Length: 530
Image 1 (spheres, rainbow, N blue to C red):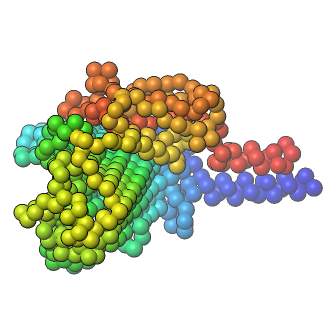
Image 2 (image 1 turned 180 degrees about the horizontal axis):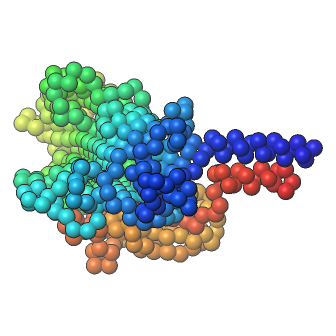
Image 3 (image 1 turned 90 degrees about the vertical axis):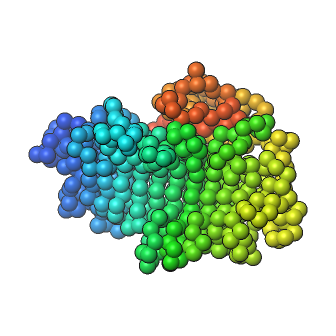
């Protein structure tokens, strides 16, 4: 009987090896390589493989080192529901560096469907200009996802680009951006900061997912779900889900806070409208002072609508924390809008008069508002409304509450989200007016007592700020009072968040993964009695 099992096991091994191949890339690899460990490819050769050589189920491993160049991926899977994976090998530190003389305008351009890119950095190393008026300036985007549906970008660090962090355009529906850090991208143009963290579109009926990312301190906006094009004659700003992200202090390096998130279209013909877009459980934050001394000035965290002829449609905003300055929440044009269970801190809620033309199609309720003024609902060039008048005149927010920021008794805010693709790792967002140290209870996550952990501040993600082991209570203290002297920012031009707010990453020591080829074989061999 065991001989039969051995035969079946051998056939299964052959099947898996044929279906799931592994290839290797090293910084000193060559175009003449065959993708083996002993004869590896260079990166561009690996990214240029046809589907008859690399296809769904296959993995291209990037080994430790700096890959300098500007690369184009034409990889694609032709196997239904199966992906080509391009990933750092094990825990190797892999960096794609786009700072080269022959500038193509991107570090990595992606053209091809069903490819997963994960666990590496995209950046520009060394010296480069961030001033567009400088004759040596070269605008470079981190990742330019031109075409190819159903791609995934997971656990990438996209930073320090003299351009946008990432653009994923209209021909890339069904794609997912998850667990990434996108920060300090952009440059100074003549009049303002330019370069966004993440710019997405979608012309398909497939849902695009933006999940559990940290996007901050980009020179212009954080996330643009948007098109500046007019006269396109078709829709391509639609079907987007954005959940569990922390998006904060965008615009800070250019000294003016800009929109953390904008959902809109500038199509004057009203055909290409932003629609079927959902924001849930996100944190959108700009530096504020709870004592109401420095909450003035421009600082939009969420902007809905841009052109009166293209109002947003079927947009759902639920369970978000939205913190900004005078116009933290900015509603310009919205045909149909659900806005529920959100917490808002702002000078005023800003609305254009035309935005309220369709307020009977709005569903606002169970929100908590904190504003700098008692008449905190401002219809621009028309009237400022107190909460009771807002409810009465527009039949909105029947079960919502309101308080002045300076008098409010704030409840501490805590948002913890596990990374799906990083075992034992969590994103932790905290906001607390009254303390500079916050105890977070991890007992709910069934972690073992004594597990070692490391805590990183997202604003300087390469430095461990605390380490220890999990005690019996499961509680870990996080420091909100991080000063720039002790824990400097990733650069010297952005603003550090104040002691009321912090975004952290905590990593617990993990054991062997429960999935994967090697573990599968170990279990199978054990089952066969070996």
